[in-house]
Length: 357
Image (cartoon, rainbow, N blue to C red):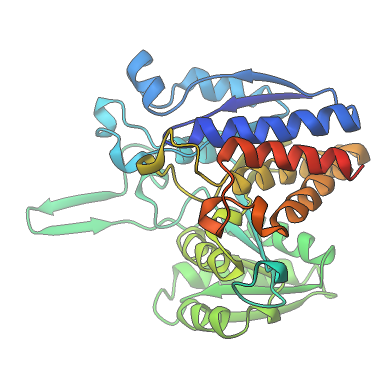
């Protein structure tokens, strides 16, 4: 099982190293046969190759069983014509990783966040309001005059249908409830097309309950009672915002795992939901939980799609080990009130994983 590791910017190398310590322990415990290769993205790639993401890196990543992608400092990159390419967008569009799966669940022992929360946001990741991924040539954001800025939104039947299908398929394995989030009262054509495809796919899953909720109301409902939701599906921009909200409501954005996947092509990429936090880079205080949980999701996804139960078991065991470590206030990272550094937390999870076998 070959994994390519792209540590990224800021705290990326630190949390990647902590995650690899956990994956190494899982590999030894479950005899997964994992192997790891490395490549560069972000500022290290820019310095060496003149671009934050090479086409060669994307082509190489496609040949691996899994991708471990660290965070990037995209806001600090130079303009695209000077090599500043959005790495996340490059992977999602370049490898067609259309399903950005973002779970959020509460942990009562943390004493923070919402109660009884266990939901998954299924985010379409290849189009929408993001101008760097909705045009064949050029970008969908421009200024016709110095005082007017325009941005184009792209919504296609194809993208809406397949993310809806992924959401309903996931709901069939959970509590059989899908909530489609939209703003069709204003975006009548684009969000109308999204809802049309969701309803079309729903007809194939009569066992699943479908609700449709306006995005602004959804934000309020999540704050009031997130326990009522199971699988939430939406277009790129809405899902991006709501998933950060849901993760923070669950206890912390630093606890939010995430994968980008394409089941039809068998491709999966583990990626933390949070950013690169360059202000604490190199201080060994970053919380690596998000990337560790993302790696666990990647193993579980590979196990499910390749009928390899050992990988599924390894992913679940990592998830359990993380909870076991977080349950002890003394073994949390500083952002959660503990004292452990990045490396020590990874080692503690690896130890908990081995001890729980």
